[in-house]
Length: 149
Image (cartoon, rainbow, N blue to C red; front, side, top):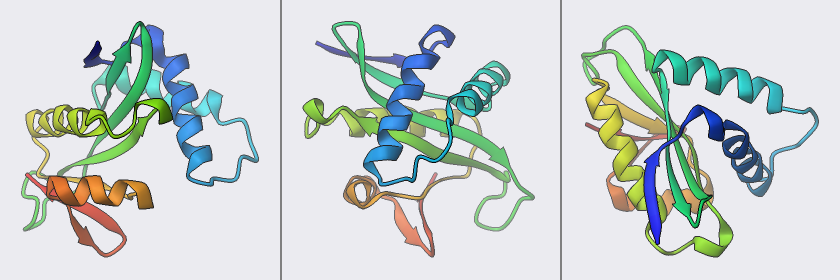
């Protein structure tokens, strides 16, 4: 049975491996060891609350991930709070795809953005992700997709 919950500090290493698998699958050039930078980022931002992740777990194994970085910009008409949720790390293990896992993770992470006071959620979507985000209600906005809260 698949369960969903927030990422904890003791799962960061596994989360990073999932992130690296995602980047590889998206065709990123792997010319450096990104693990130290990712470890630093996730530890700092989980601690200060500017990053949150919901994960999907099956039999103790992380099989799906999501991430939300809350950034603040000067307020503008489309986002009077100035707070923007940057969606990242949306990834589901190949064996578990097409089971609504990504959609469930997206529901949780959008709720996190709403609770953090974000006025919008943005993502630079992979080709595979565009269908998920469009079906959810995201709209194209130049080079990124946006979901208006």
